[in-house]
Image 1 (cartoon, rainbow, N blue to C red):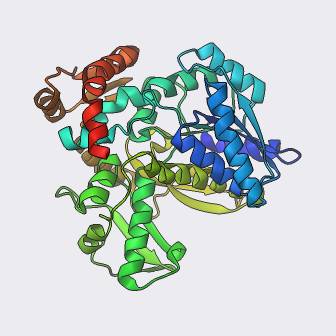
Image 2: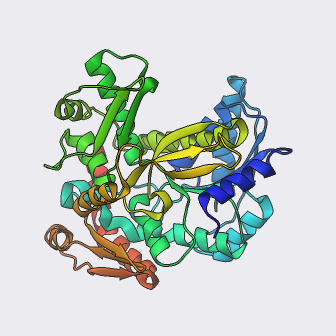
Length: 399
C-alpha cells in the first residue's frame, strides 16, 4: 500500500487532463449530505459515483439532490449510480471500484443503518468504543477490495476512525488515509466559542492545534467539561496566541443540537473539508491544515497538514506545536474513557470499566479482546444482544 503522500502525488498527475472521480460508498445521512455539498461546489471538473444496494433508494436520493442543486444553478457535476453492491460481498465492492476507478473514496457506510449508536451507549455506558466491531465491519471489506484491485485512491473513513484505522493498520491490512468527524467537530466548536468570547467574527482566522480522541468530542459537546482531563490545545488568531479561559470556552461548547441523523451534517461537512483540502493541494499547490481521527493509522485525533506548495505533495501530522509522543499519550488517555484500552497486532482490547458497565446496563458479557478474525462474530453479537434489545428505548428517547 502506498503512503498518503505518494497517492496525493499520483492524483496530481492523474487529474491534470481529466476530471477528479469521487466515490461515495453508502448513501445514508452522511452520504446524502456530502453529495449535496459536493454538488453545491459547482465543480465541472468532478465526477461522482454513489454506491449502494437499493437502486430505488439511490435514484430517489440522487434525484432530489440533482434537482435541488439545479434550482440553485449548481448542477454541474455528473453523478453515476452503482447499485446492487452488498458490502458484505468483497467481490461486488471490487466490481464497483473497477467500474468507476475512483481517485477519492469516501466510506460513509454503517453496519446498522438508521441508528445513532451513541443514543444507546452514552446514557448507558458513556463509551462509544463498544461499537468498534460494527464501525470496522464494512470498512475492512472495503479496504480488502481496495487492496485486491490495487487501487491508489485516497480513502476517507467516516465511522469511528479513532479506533478503526489503527485497528486495520496493526492487523497489517490496507487502511484509510483520513478519518472524518470527531476531533474535527470539536475544533470548530472551539473556534466558534473562542470567537464569541473574544468578539471575533472571522472565525476562519482562528487557528487551533488539538490532539484528542472521540470521547472528548462527545463529553464536551454534550456536557461542557473534559471529565477531569486537561486538554492538549493551542489557540491563536492571525498568527498570535490568544489568552482565553479554556474551561469557560469548553463550557460554551455545550449547545443544543439534534441527536438524530441531522447531526451527521457535521460529519459530511468534515468529509467535504478533507476533499476540498486535497483538491486545493493537488490543483492549486496550497498548504492546508485540518484535524483528523485515525491519521496515518494513529489512535485518536491529530492536526494534519496537506502541503502542496513544493514539487512533491506531503501529508503529515503537524508537530509544530505539540510533539508526537505527547499527542499519542493524550489520545490514549482520551480513548481509554471511550472504553478502549489498546489496539495492537490486529486485536482491540476493551477496558475493564467498559465491560463492567455493559454487564450492569445490558446484562451482557462482552469479550475483553476482539481479534481481527472475530470482528464479524462480535459485531453480530453486539447487534443481537445490545442494539436490537434496546433500540426501542433509543427511539423513544429521541422522540
